[in-house]
Image (tube, rainbow, N blue to C red; front, side, top):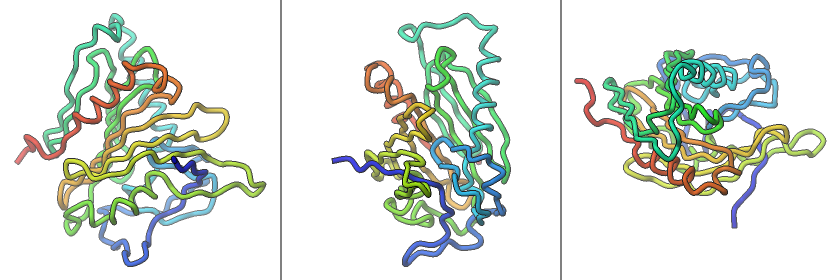
Length: 256
């Protein structure tokens, strides 16, 4: 039985038996959730609670404004190129030589890179025919003494960062519906499959997400997503997202 959860974002600074060290990230910031306009992230969830919260840089949500602007930029870049049918797509490979992160997406998808706060870099690939179908990787610098994913907590703990526990609004209504389908360790990474519906005005989305660490240097988070409706009705989309996620690797051909 799946466990559907309704969530609002809360800062994660303590775990029973596990305390986040102040040196975890090279940059920490006091983030006003109110300034995020209640927007949700993709993979890390923004708040409906407008309290100011100390939030380490890697756990800052990706503002929907950031991801939307990046997607629009990718679509604008792709407007000058002929459309490639989904059936005829070959694969293109993304490779970051600094950290050795690599993954595959269809060759027709449009790429955009954006620099975010805290020296983070966001790289997004978007299906030009459906901007709800995309893949993105986020690079976040970390402190030298964080040498493995265990430094962030075990997989159950991290799953509560990716898909936070259930809360409801003051009137008892759902704030954000989530469903954690699977959480496991795979290829030395943390892997999560889940759905998120920020509110009733937006589509439910299906995610495959990986967390990976370059020891003492960078937290690398990768996600591939589509709407849940498309995921359930299109075998091609299911195969595409799964194969893109399974192609994700970190540490190969890393620049010395």
